[in-house]
Amino acid sequence: MRKLVYLTLFGLLAISACKKGELKGDNGCITKIRRSFGVSVADSLKAVALLKSNGISTENLVYDRITLDDTVTNVNSHVTSVYQHIDALQYANGLPIFNAFIGYHFNEGKYFTTIGTKYGNVNLSTSHHLNLSQVRELFLQAGGTETAKMKDSCLAAEFGYYD
Image (cartoon, rainbow, N blue to C red; front, side):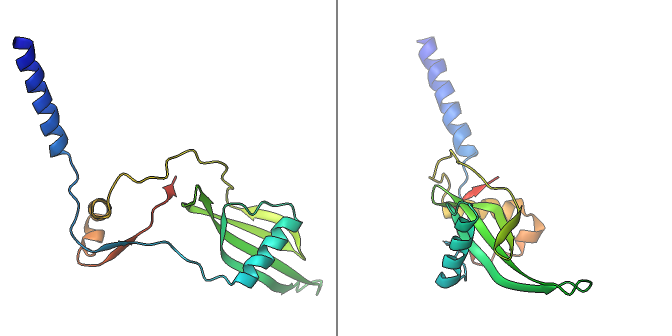
């Protein structure tokens, strides 16, 4: 009998402890978004062709900025070169990897450098554990006085991976 009382008491304490730490959420405005980029289909196809012609994988890339005709003339030699730049956000499992921009740079169509880190497989879940109101509350709490000014603003959230 005594074990049953202790077990019940322990169970009630555990439940109340969980409820005390439970994140209720903020009832303010927040919407879920999926970012879109302003790169044309034609430029995207040219970028894919350029990357593939240089043996670079186009898998899991969403193009953010493409410059295919960056013409530069060397002031000393007067030689003119045409550079191409492809900036992309990386995706894994259909979700963006935040702050994982990668830039590929070419001279006259030939690869010469990459800026950023190319991520491989990401073995993490694709399901979220917080609802939007909880995300809003955590964001407003984390920023302190800076985000307190945003309390009456409508926020936008995007689900993805963050390293």
